[in-house]
Each structure stands twice: as structure tokens, then as C-alpha cells.
Length: 312
Image (cartoon, rainbow, N blue to C red; front, top):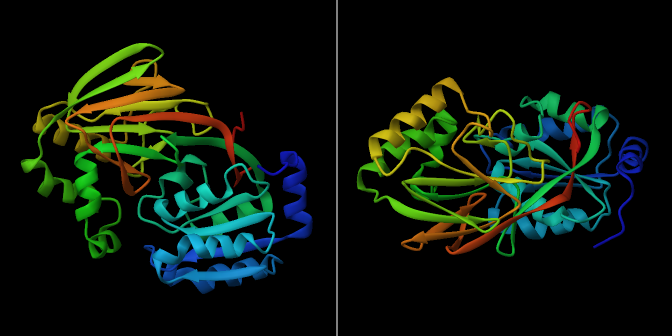
């Protein structure tokens, strides 16, 4: 772990020295269309990036992030969806470099959790007018994540949703794909142990969130990506109709409960077991299986956020 400047010193260095590197996933929903626009707007603000990299092959993303970081930027600007940004988070975690986020994906959960403007010009202005903050880093076993670990229907949906459907419909592509997956899905039992207390539930869908948003909608009114807590919650129950109704209701109304009154399990560390053992979707990558130990690392990542972001 490198020695870190204060956040105020880091912010000042970005504003004065303007040492930035840019990596944009041109396979993301809006990345290819906006790549040159991003570069032009950065130049108009007086930035001369140390590296300007377009990612055309997602398999090269990690190597290209390393290439950008090797130029020694104070701010690594990354454009793409939540999967791209999760990879970037893993690269900058515990390092003296801040992550600048350009929301170019479908749901943009990470950008929403940071309170960033979702329009490109607004997000870029944050690099000039915002500040460096440190936010929580989630850990699923030894795998870092920015936003969410999910289990159940969503894992199958993530593997089946068509790229063209995401491009055309955006966020609604996911619930529509879920309608085709749900009829053949079997509910599972989940056991969540927090602070010595074991919680049991039967469900088709379980999420454990570090960030504030899932599917582009807020998890709860009072959740934060900087509160030192993970939040576990189920959608619906073991009944498929209830899952469908609750998902559609939340997607259309955006109404989520408070942590104090909602069906949430909250803690800094959780042990998740399932019957049967299940695959985990960790920020869009399916590589782990239950049982999984999840925990939060407070202030594990530096990011560039709007000036009004509450940095705890």
C-alpha cells in the first residue's frame, strides 16, 4: 500500500497539476459513441491526458488499466458500465490515485451511489469542481467489489440478457429478461450470520450491497457507499409471483424502505451460506460460490465526487 496524501492535498494536486489518464470501454453502452467527445471535453477544460486509451477487447481491460496507471496520474478517469468501473476500483484500491467516473453503462449503479451527474458533460465537470473522497470497498472472500454481490435469478439474468436489448431499452432489459428466467427458477434457502446471529430466509433473489443502487434504483433511502456497512436484502420470497410483483413495483415507483424499517440484514461482516450452494455475481462477474464471507473495508478507495458528497 502506498503512502496516501490527505484528500485535500490530493484534490489540489488534481486541480493544479492536471495529471490524468483516461480509459474508456468502447464496448459499453455509450462508450464507443462518446469516446472522442470525452477526450475533446477534457482538452477543453485544460487537461492533456498522460494516456488516452480505448478498450475494444474487454479481455485487455486490466492490462490497459495497468498501462494507464503506469503513467503516474493523480486521477484515473474511467468510462464504462458497472463491470468496467468495478475492475477500475480493484486497480486503485488503497493507492494514492483517485478514480474519476464516467457513467457510460446501462444502469450506472456506481455513479449513482457517488451522486454523480449521469450526463457526460456534468460528470466531466466534477473533475474540475469536485473533491477527492474515500469510500467503502466491499470484499467477497478475497475479491474486492464496489457495488453488489447477488445470488439467484439475477445471476441467470446477467448471463442471458442480450447486449442489443440493453442498448435499445437500457435498464428495463433486465426485468424483461427476468420474466423469461423466473418460470424455471427454483427458490433457495439462505443463511446469513452477522455478529453471531443467524438469519434464515427462502427466496429466489438475494442481494448484498455496498453501494446505494441496484438495477438503477435505490436500495434504501438511508443507505450509503461510505457508511462502513453491507446491507443484505431479498426481493420477494420463495413465491415467484411475489418476486415479480415486488420487483416491478420497485422498478416503476422507486419506493424503497428505510434501513430502520425494511427487511434488511446489516453488518460490517457477513457469512453467507445457501442450500443448495450457489454461484455469486460480484459486480457483474460470476466467479465465486457459496459459502462466502463478505466484509467491508472502510475508506478503501479514493474517488472524485461532487463537492456536496457527504464524505464520512
